[in-house]
Amino acid sequence: MIIAGAGMCNGGRIVHHLRQHLHKANTHVTIVGYQAEGTLGRRLVNREPVVRIHQQEIEVRAQVHTLGGLSAHAGRTTLLHWLTPLLSGGARPAVALTHGEDKPRQALAAGIAERYGVAAILPRFGEHIDL
Image (cartoon, rainbow, N blue to C red; front, top):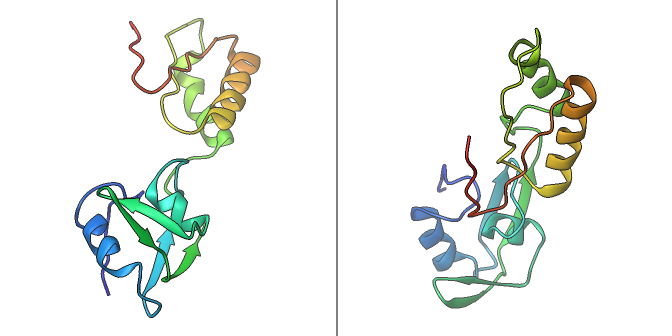
């Protein structure tokens, strides 16, 4: 049994373990928590038959299991509640939503605009923003 803390399977020793064992039918991989689009973890959750690791195509014969409900990320309601003391009383700091996929970020930005009248910034990967 190998337990790895590299959440999306994109870095660290887990990548090497997966490269060495995904092709084996008797391997079991359990993915716990959210896996972002484009990550090795998401490709495994999506049951892609072949993944690329270190420029090598690996056939996935391993049994991939998912265990949901253990993500430490707050939901929309909790995040809006968390913002209340920061955005009440006329304060209007910049809000940049830098984590997550586009649809949920857009939904949260809409909630922030509706509740607080603040337009959140939604930067793309690699984009620089001035605060």
